[in-house]
Structure formats: structure tokens, C-alpha cells
Length: 328
Image (cartoon, rainbow, N blue to C red; front, side):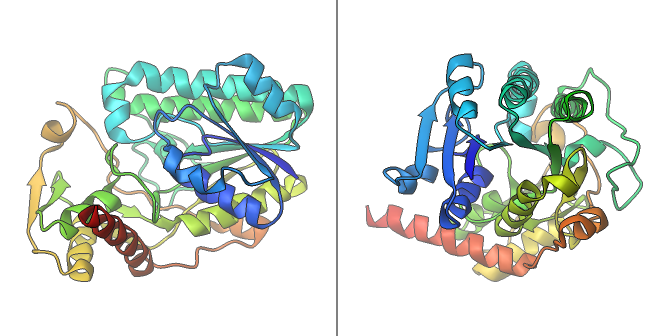
């Protein structure tokens, strides 16, 4: 197939691009490198089935050309990371909503099957654990920009599902729950690479709030497997929303302790209030645990890697980067 990946120079996108090329697809990537990195896709440059454009989703001519040549679109481009969302709420909303609107418009024009990336953030402050795709959603007030990301991604979902209902466009929604793995940047607050880098450098691990908040971390390889299966099964997944994540829950304090144990780090943990880390009045979700029964039924998918396996992969990647930097 000819697959068009927006945000393909990002963390998940670059892993997906590699998997698509390995199975024989032709892949086009559009990325403005605002949060993605050229280094992520540099290994693919020159590949006969890979094409890359550095540009914005709002460039209608480029977007139209790439969609016209594609059978399917995987829309991953978005404003990502809590730190970026808090500091640049306007850019977050415009990037997510206007970008998705533009992608769906060209997908309709060329009848491309479409896979839209969403997030566990849309569950907001919901307390019905584990989260099911049809649960009611509870976001915080609009006066706190932290919730602008969740609201914008939820609107993306509405746009995609509306395109399916009104125009018959084969659209599926993938809600990611803390996808992590080698190659993830810690620039925008991603906790696993940040902890690993701190530990490998002999620094204290900074845990925000009291560390009792819990998350479920899914290896990017498992996430990519799910995306490929959703992409290949439009007859059973179109018009549907699917959680993609692990159900192995851990608190952030326990995560920090595991990183220290597996890196042999100094063992110090420092707790930083949310207001100091982000902004006064910052709110967070206490728990994020997905119910993955729906995706398991639809495509027979389950995550295969536990947290220790994930940490070992990230540690090996970050240690190699550290060693290379020291050699230079």
C-alpha cells in the first residue's frame, strides 16, 4: 500500500515508518519538525519506497499531493507533551484541530482510509477505572490551559467520526495510553526518558507532586503492531474508537524506583510541586488505566512487553547515546 504518515518524524511516527517499510509499503511523511526530529527518519532517506516533506499540515498544496498518491493516511501530527501544552495552548489547539480538519478534507477527496491518533487525556478526570471507549468524559475548566490538549483531541475524534457517518470515510480512532520506548524525547515532560537520563547522569530523579499518580506504559513496538492491524482492517474498525495501552499499572514513585534499580543510579528522588514544574493551579489525572477488551476482540491485540522490558530498552538506548556523546 501507499501510506501517508503525518508527524512521521516523531517518536511513534518514525517507529511506524520503519515497520511499514519493512513489510513492503511505500511511505510518504509530512512533518514540520516542530516536535519531531530529522534524525528519527534520517536512516530512511534514500530508500526507494520512502519520501519526506518538511512542511506544515496547513500547506494545502503539499497535503493534497501526498494524499492523492496514498491509499491510507495515519494522522499522528499533533502538539504533544504536557509542558508544551501548558506553555503554548493556542498553538496546541490550532495544530490539533485545524490539522485534523485539513487531513480529513483531503482524505475525503481521495477516499483514503484514515487512522487518527488520539490520547488517554480525553478521559480527563474520569474515575471509572479502567477507562472504556464509551465512558462519559470529564474535563477540567477552560480557565486551565492544561485541558486544552484533551479538548482539542476530543474534537479531532468528533471530526473523524462525523466524516465516517456523513461521508462513509473509513476512519478509526486510536487512543494512546503512555506509549514509550527507545527514541522518545524527554523535552516536553515525557517521564520515562527523563528519569532514565537523570539516573544515567547520576542526578536525582524529579517526581512531580507526591508520586502517587499512576500510569500504564506501553512499548512503542506494541503500539505500532496495533496501528498496523487497525490500518489493515477497515471493514471491522471503521467508525470505532480503540484504546491502545498496557494494563500494567504503576505509580510514578515506583517507576522512579525501578529506573534507579535497573540503572544502578544514585537512588535519590526529589519531589517537585506541580505548580513549580508547570504552572500554578495545574491539574493532573490521578490514574490512567485502559480497558483493552474492545481492541482485543477487533484485531486480537495484546501488549507483549512488561515495564521492566520497556525500561531496559530505553536504558540501553540512552546509555548508547550517552557513550556516543562522551566519545565525541
